Length: 229
Image 1 (cartoon, rainbow, N blue to C red):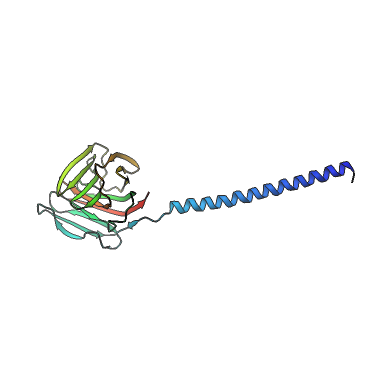
Image 2: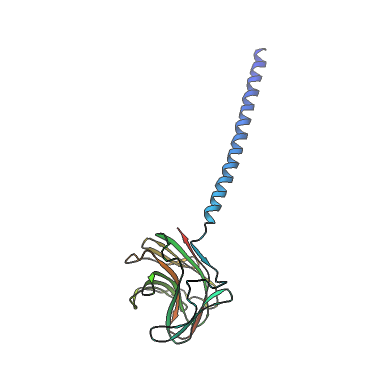
């Protein structure tokens, strides 16, 4: 083979090698893309620690009528695939705990959809050890947000702020992210407050809470979830 033929043969082999390398790189990228895509989807689709769409009653949630410490009547029930809080007297506060008391990690996210059917209500999340020892992160229909603590039946206000009014009848999305003692409370994707709990209440119980000091109300909750961070 003459020198020119040898040169052409070497070029052809080099070109073939480059083609093989490029083909292998493309295949590898496609494979990695598929794997990364599947991994991303799997992380986004992590099953929550607890979820309830309130389509059917489940153990752990309070139902029926009850009375607060002053004997004023309230009602908790399942209605039309939602969890309904009805206040039948002029004032009461009540809550319902999810049945996941000792299974929460140090960091978790609470989410729920909520709408006020009637009245001027306060509503939000309860986080703590139980009825007599918990924190309430809430918002009010008239505008504003707050954190209070219940200890042995005594209520103490820890933080109060003003904000845009919640629209009665509209569906709003509440979220509370708790990382150790650090809490972030949001509504409709807008952060209302960052707050550090004065003390750890782990292992936590979590639940929903509603009430009013301004007359009869009805609040509906739906799609409550607790997800590990």
